[in-house]
Amino acid sequence: MCSSSQRAGCEHGAMTRSIEEPRNARSRRSRAALLRAARELVEEHGMAATTMAAVAERAGVSRRAVYLHFASRAELISELFDYVNEVEDIEGRFAPVSDAPDAVTALDRFARRHAEFMRRVLAVSRAVEREAGDDPDAERHWATAMYWRYETNRALMERLDREGVLAPGWTVDTATDMLLALISNSVSETLLVNRGWTAEQAGEHMALLLRSAFVAQG
Image (cartoon, rainbow, N blue to C red; front, side, top):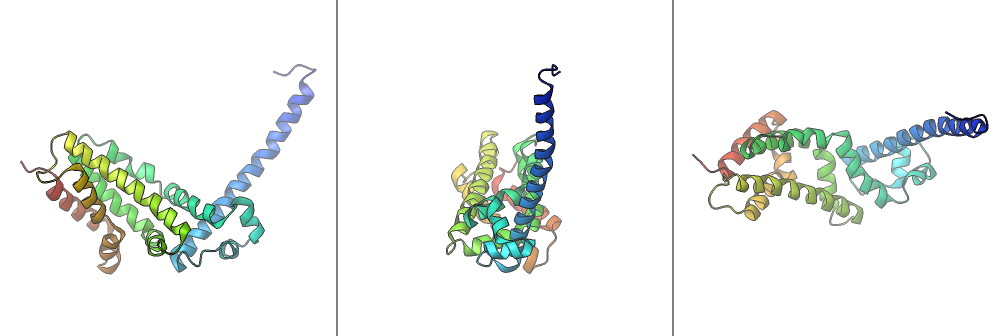
């Protein structure tokens, strides 16, 4: 409660908040629209075509408006990684993996969830990967993506090893590296695009492959 002597200040604060909140909401919507435009450009035309001017044109705003939200193209591309993962709910999508009752179930769930996730993000991921060697912004984005893939894979293999079901012949290191290769963009593209598999087919057969390769039999 505000006293009579404080009322003016309280009313001013409430008025300021009522003005700031819509402004903040508009700012978040504008930022999301720019990131959505950037994602579309990357998917359709590649990283090289995703300039600040192109993003502005796709979003229907001025270049100045883009720079109000992102100080540079590097910042825009960096935040694109977080935006795609947020839109596709990567945390919620993979939550059942970490919540699995045992390592083998976790591996199975991972295969299926990864296939579904790649069906949705393959276009942008492939575009970033293709240009990572020539575009510094793409390279930083790709390095971040690969870091999280590696850490996720390693956690799975460490759990298999900890529960005593990692197949003979593998170490955590070698199994992690092999899984990284098996879930590469090129494998996903071969199955989902070139061969026309559904995400369900890819997930089911990848789960079979991972179980036979990495889980001790019997």
